[in-house]
Amino acid sequence: MRNRLLGSLIAMALAAPVSIALTATSADATTIYYSSCSKLHVRFHHGVSRSRAAALRQVRQGYGLPAYTALAQRVYWRNYKRLDRDRDGTACER
Image (cartoon, rainbow, N blue to C red; front, side, top):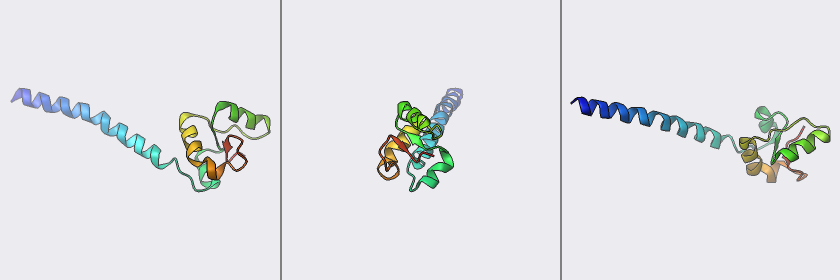
């Protein structure tokens, strides 16, 4: 009886972090697609870049520093065909 209780407690402890991790990745997956720049600007104020070099190029041209984190790069690659109209490596720069 005691071993069965201990085994179920261990199983619950191991299952808890997995469910949290799955929730976090599913939330990121739903926020990768943006239908317009105004919707993207709510989360990324100066746009998103495909790389750090592209982000710094925007700063040299007088824009604000766009995000270039791993999430921002995934957002860029998911939306660049619609939102990066000048094909400079930054979507929705401002």
